[in-house]
Image 1 (tube, one colour):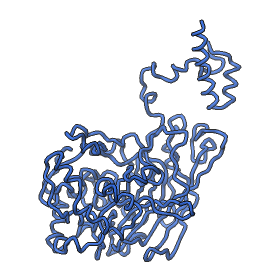
Image 2 (tube, one colour):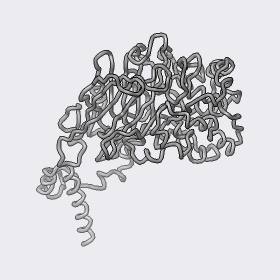
Image 3 (cartoon, helix red, strand yellow):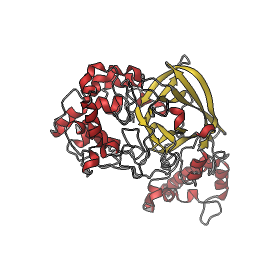
Image 4 (tube, helix red, strand yellow):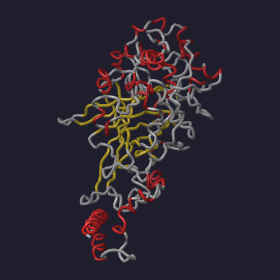
Length: 510
């Protein structure tokens, strides 16, 4: 853990708001026992036992912010499938067809959703007689060489007491941006990304597809908190990995209850079809890191199957958190006194005067005040550094939620000022200036060949003449090479390897 150099007045922004709320007769006066729900959500990169085995259904992160280039809209980004290895073919990364990927909106603070956006996906295969994801360079989303494609529908449900009172299909058969196989397969991925951005009726815009994982942190925190001696900080562990993203930009008036109540609560879930054909919730996410480091192992799967209005069952995990005790045991930094009412206010109710809705029912979700204008120069620590347009008022892609959460958990709001962090302050790739804002996914061709390593390690030098074009000087039997070309790319590779093996055996014989 490292320190940062925030300036004096700004760094106390959230502390001032929280202390004012407590002094005004908030949670401290009411007592934690008066609260029903607790905080639990996740930056859920493999955060719970059951969901870690089914990555297609695993929420990784949720973001919500006022769109910086269209401030009358709100952008919501939800990610799934952690740790996508860019070269992980031939079966690259698709959304599940037997899943409902849902984005929930609570616009009155009652811990129940009043609006739901549901994404469902369909997979299409052009040629089932090849193992290839693409059979040639892909230049558009409808390119015949893109063998595996997906499309999706979006349904908007209006709810009352968790029952749908209306259903409207707002998108139909929208194409998904594919996995970025590599430079030979997708020479202009920017074009594919642009073609996957679709404008819908009423000013809504949608995107679904692969993206660079925008979450930046050093995950070696789990090696007994950064190696036990702070030797394991400063590396963005998610650098080079991708995720599957859903991004939705909607007119803000569509999701808020009224102009004088601009705060919305947002969370995402995944429902999976079971053997009986019924959809069952298997993943849930609101604030980052909660299900990873706040909920104990015994509660993680329960949380993923639960809903915000039942969060009272997890309250003790917030008021008596484990993380400060671990830090005290390893680094001798005293844990703040319990119960941690400061954490309840920030993560379960929202900050009073900023993003706490009136008559709020404490529950875990990402809360955003949509009336706060985007910051001209966003600060990575958000509200903690005086930038009220950032985390925990929603979450922007650039917000350093690990440092902010770590400092708050270690008592920043109750007089234990600290500048703790993991020394990873920004994403390895720059984010975009317009929707969907996400960075392009890392391509599968990155690696030794892409970086130009010594030719002795080059696959081409290992295969030698086996992959040389027919008719080239010194090439082996042109008839055999021509036959391999007729067998397709897979046949070419297999025959090339066979030739290499045959040459080796012939050299040994002589």
